[in-house]
Image (cartoon, rainbow, N blue to C red; front, side):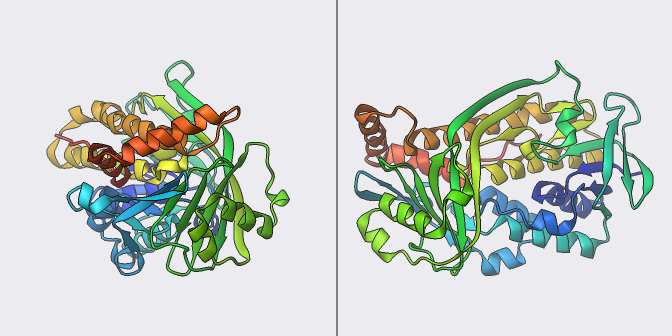
Length: 394
């Protein structure tokens, strides 16, 4: 079996890359070790940057997002008993974000791929990458009891932090940068109306809280918990009580609670590997970098990697610009480190760290007060939140 680009992983980044390549006439095959239902069952991000929204439109998969998604012109920071709105649209010259769940993005991309007739293999086993620096890269895997050898020209590793792509790069090639945070996010999904029209990020002496949403009738709320906490120790009532305690009183009074339909604890870490390529293999999204969710950058950073790799491959196949292949990592990392910085800053400013004393708490609040009290500070927050411009491939 042969193709031009083999894509490892059928999550949103792999599917989006496949959709863009297919529309550009570049043949690609996606392989995924999990079944489609498992991929769709992942409860993840819901805030899409302006750049990702535009990229989904370019890929021709935005119809449902544009009709059902919730455009947001701003968000709120709550601290020291205050609520301060960051007006994204006004501060960035018209840019906004879109509230539309990752599950829905993935579903739209799956439907588009099925309609296109492009090939996707789910439930693959024993996948291995071969000859990554040679003349004939390939992927071998088992599917429906048969061993398949997929010959290709390039491989996109879109298979996440624990996938085989990064693990296929020999020891000593990659440099890792990592920070593990001493807490997690306990998240609850509920079919209740949002407490606010826009997201609220709360800094409180008891810990961080976030009021988010997936739609006008489905909410996603989070509270910071210790790293060793267990989901089973958090019945719904305890969660709602804790969330209310961390919100401004007027907000807590309006909160409508209900039974959770999903509950989980996500650890927080910052992680980057350099370089993001090895021979014919290009790492995309979580395979190369992780951000704490505070800045809403995880899925969006994967989309910017997809954008860069797609632009490069488009020029390779349509203009013969093979020289651009070696610039993939350099171009991606420029934007990645800036997003890592913003996510680290948001995490540092909004969470309670072990050993935080009264002085540290006041310094956090003063830092927030300084930024929201300055036009330049608000603009800095806004331009990072809507997403910095994609790097130009030329």
